[in-house]
Length: 140
Image 1: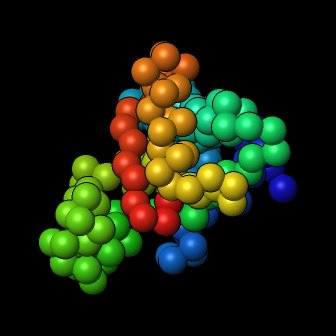
Image 2 (image 1 turned 135 degrees about the horizontal axis):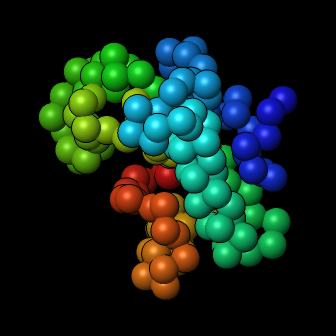
């Protein structure tokens, strides 16, 4: 078990649907000399640690979606059509999931709406410098 940060394991970011492991050792062409673990997964998990901490003692955030290859992202879109989750799912070539920078998370203590509010407050306060975007779905 390899920890990325104190509360998140590398294995939590494996694509559950495609069974494809997060490419921790892949060289990041955008961050020369770094791997995806260093330049993509660590900042993502670091952001989630801040959210976890700010959300209250004992709050756990469970990833229910993380890295997924472009082919899986496209299958999700193809399966659900243009209305997939209100039309909010990014195209395979623009989604941050295939780039290893996105997380679908849920809390067992906060509703999706309350967790979303925490994230927006933290972002407004400048506490989430790695956050590039945020979405809210009915269950996560």
